[in-house]
Image 1 (cartoon, rainbow, N blue to C red):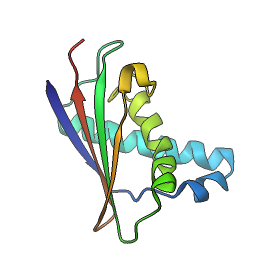
Image 2 (cartoon, one colour):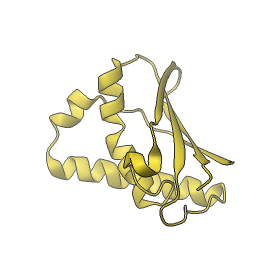
Image 3 (cartoon, one colour):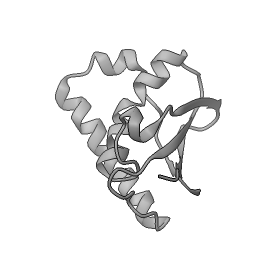
Image 4 (cartoon, one colour):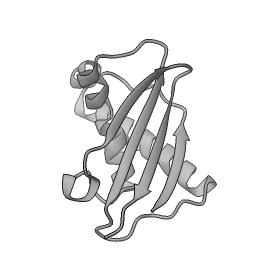
Length: 120
């Protein structure tokens, strides 16, 4: 099993805040995340997954104040979409991703994302 990690200097926004955003702002947020993911993949020499590759995913969000679990997971949607678009994961469908793990820790705002490529 191959494991890759990236760290992105963002704070996960709560699902409640994202729900109030205009669709264009949500798209801009996803595009920003996508650029950060692309940059980290290039800096860490992480290759895109192959077509249909199954992966495990762990997201650790560091925040000064923690969110309730539903708001944290919902706030990760734009980030997971960016991970898919950049090929860090193949798809967010459970067939390819399984059940991702979401963890919150206190600390300076950032997100650590760990991908484990599972055998086919």
